Length: 232
Image (cartoon, rainbow, N blue to C red; front, top):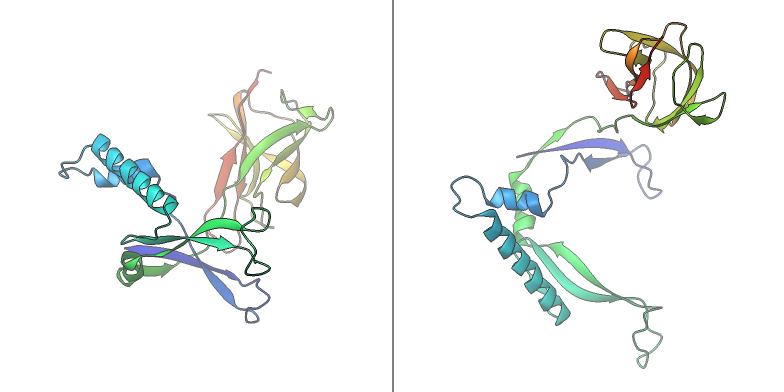
């Protein structure tokens, strides 16, 4: 097992000057269906309905035990009820405006021993992919409905980063046969771009393609807008 991690500047005021903190680079999350799939591997002899039934009953049993005031101590997790908030005296009592019933969760023995069997690998920090949220015709201020030569378009989204002197990054208009690079008028922040459409616009089903490259990364990342039908 290999667990990837990346370093980011330590922004905590209590941290050492110019220090870094590690952040685990998650492969994603596993929900109930994912756990069931891992239980019901070929040859296990366990059906999905059986696995779901057992997990449902396990959840119900844990819930009942906690409601009855027990600490639940399982191989992978330990859960116990606790109360947050301060009491003014020994005669004070629980009030929902000042106090909160919650559950503290700590690793069970299995999780405490698990790190010994996991290898760590340092990688670059995962970057969020660029996304296109909205296209606006700057002449009308309305949602973009069609494409015309020399039109100014505002592209709203996230993670639009274009390193200077990088010819590959930018905004393109593409169909299946060709792509035309679009002039960027303004890119003051990573959530918005102003572009000037070229004199020649590809015809047919055309989409905007945003191509970015993040600092210290060699690979390009891109995203597409919804398609437009262009008939000239």
